[in-house]
Amino acid sequence: MSPPPPASADAATVRVPGAQFVTDGATRLKEIGFAALLLTLLGIALLTLLVLMIDVIVEGASSITPEFFTETPSRIDPESSGIAPAIWGTVWLMIVCAAFIIPVGVASAIYLEEYASRENWFARFVEVNIQNLAAVPSIVYGVLGLAFLVRGPLSLGNVVLAGGLTLGLLVLPVVIVAGREAIRAVPPSIREGSMALGATKWQTIWKQVLPASIPGIATGVILALSRAIGETAPLIVVGATAFATSTSTALLQEFSALPIQIFGWTADPQEAFKALAAGAIIVLMVILLGMNAIAIWLRNRYEQKW
Image 1 (cartoon, rainbow, N blue to C red):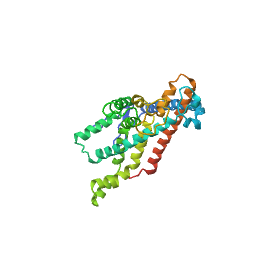
Image 2: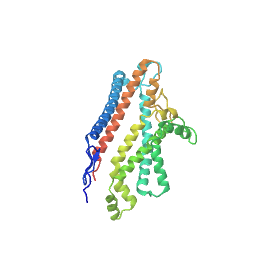
Image 3: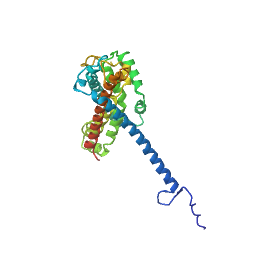
Image 4: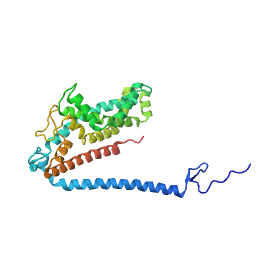
């Protein structure tokens, strides 16, 4: 039997029995070029973000004074304008949003991960819709909130409750996905050991699985709220007030929010209001960075290595 012919020297790859592919110089050069292209694009994106942040900080730093956090906005006098109603409206929105997404999101994650059968048509239907809803533009949720919460069956009006529930619907898929991943990360041996000692399925979930997955769930909730706090389009549709003259103190009051206040000031023709908008952007960025830092700290501090 004649031996097999030798591989061509100019082949792109040569398969070595029992080893990985060996690439030639041309393929390696392409890999280096592609990696360099990705790093270049990443550098351009980061540089653009840095320039925008520096521009905002330079323009808005002078607006951040103690009175800026305590005064109400004005359409006439920029010197006496503040973001107090917007800050309190944002706090109320986050309270309503969290009160909605935490129980609903965690309960949905537990059902889909622990109880639902993979062959169940209803479970598959819910999973497909969760994946689809995560990609729906935020303006669609605003229209949904306007049709069913502000008007329609509930007719709540342009109030804090309607705005918070609308934002909750927007970020609910994020909480469900994060909750499922956190629950799935708990090893099956934890469940098996608990039930072997006589615990029921619900006792196992409540006493073992859920406490072990709380860090991942909390991280998902914080990231969801940090997304909701920066949304503008849904709040515009549900009727948030751009220039609120009083602070919201109840769920059924009209409200403002930081993104809406920023939008209102940037649309004003007076240049002085542009500086106020930049100052409000700085406040919003600090809040968002703080929330994301808390999420990262929770993940690194309480994440368990099984």
